[in-house]
Image (cartoon, rainbow, N blue to C red; front, side, top):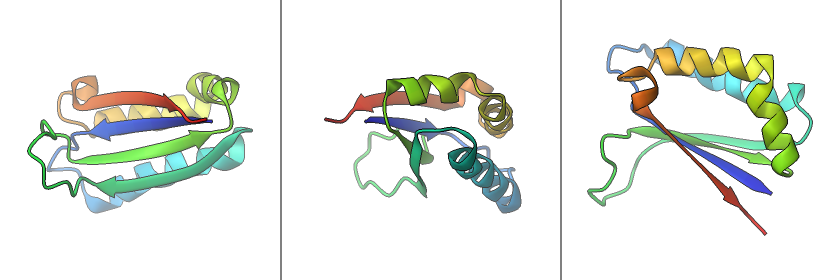
Length: 103
């Protein structure tokens, strides 16, 4: 399994409705792309001082690397990703992605 971890710096002026719509777009990918599993969203609640300005994050579980790779090039992911990046401080500078292989 691949756990796709995404950490973001959402701009303060992005309305809650737009944030919810971005989450819905990403959640909808589960029904469009084979091998996409659980999707989780949330705000950073760590008491440690190491967030480096990243305020929110989400994870997407993929059955395997092939499912993750299909997601990366899928048109619906491209649209959802563009909407997400438009809501971030500094565009892609407000984004960090880290994939973990889970045995």
